[in-house]
Image 1 (cartoon, rainbow, N blue to C red):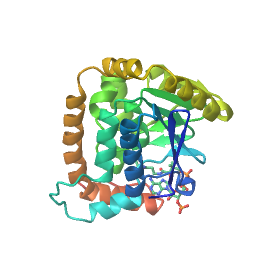
Image 2 (image 1 turned 45 degrees about the vertical axis):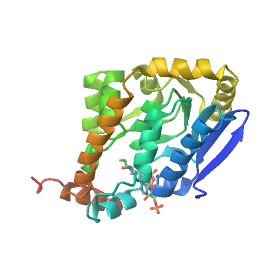
Image 3 (image 1 turned 180 degrees about the horizontal axis):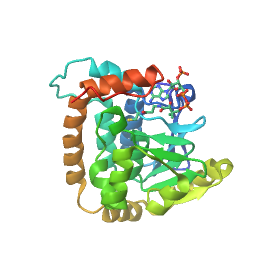
Image 4 (image 1 turned 90 degrees about the vertical axis):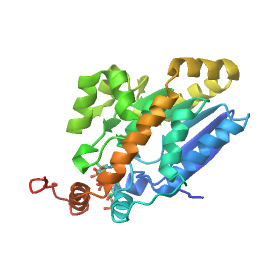
Length: 261
Ligand code: COA
C-alpha cells in the first residue's frame, strides 16, 4: 500500500490518482505496484467498468523516479521469474480489456507519455506537455512505445520525439493523435470524470469488444516489443551513459557524454 496512489471507485469508474506532487509524481516501485493492482482489480471486479488515471499537483508525472533508476543501475542484473512492479504495470496496460482513460494535467515525462499510448482515451489540460527524454538519459524507450508511437504518428515524428527528447504541448499532441481532446486546465478533471462515467454507463461487453477491435490482434507483438525494449533498458540502466546522465540531473548540470564511446 502507498498513499502516493489514491484509489477511489464511483459510478463504475475506478480513479487512480498519482499523489506525490512534491516530486512531480515521479513513479516509485510502490506506485507502479498500486497502478498494476488497480488495472487487475478493474479486470476482475464487475462493478468497475473504466479506469481513470489522473494526478494531484501541477504535473501528471515526471516519469520513473531517477533515484530509483540510479539504485537499479548500481545493482547487478538478476534472473528472477518474479515480474517487477513496472513490468507488471506495463504488461497490464497492454492487456487490459476494460477501457483506460488518462487525464493529463501539467507535464508528462517518460513513462508518463508512453503509458498514454495504451490508454483508450487521453484527455489533456491546455498547458500539459509531453516529453520522452529516454535518449537524453542514456536509456531507450519502453512500454512497447517503439512499436506504438511510430504507428500512431509516423516514423519521422516518432524519431523526432524519441531521438531529440523534445517537449511538445497539448495542441501538438492532439494534432499528432496522442491526445483525444484538450480542455481548459481548470475544467479538465470534471470534464474527464463526466466522460468516464458516461463510458462506464454503456453496455460493458459492447465497450470491451469495441476496444479489442480497435486495438487489433497485436497484443502479443506489443508484449514482445516490451520484452525487447526491457532487455536493452536493463543493460543501459547499468551503463556509464546512464550513470553520467542521472548524476548530471541531481547535480543540476548538463550531462557530458563526450568521453564515452
Ligand atoms: N525522479 C526523481 N525526482 C524527481 C523527478 C524524477 N523523475 N522529477 C522531478 N523530481 C524531483 C526533483 O528532484 C525535485 O526534488 P527536490 O525538491 O527534492 O529537489 C522535485 O521533484 C521538483 O522537481 P524540479 O526539477 O525542481 O521541478 P522543475 O519544475 O524545475 O522541473 C522536471 C520538472 C520534470 C522538468 C524536472 O524535474 C525533470 O527533468 N525531471 C526528470 C524527468 C525525467 O528525466 N524522468 C525520467 C524519464 S525516463
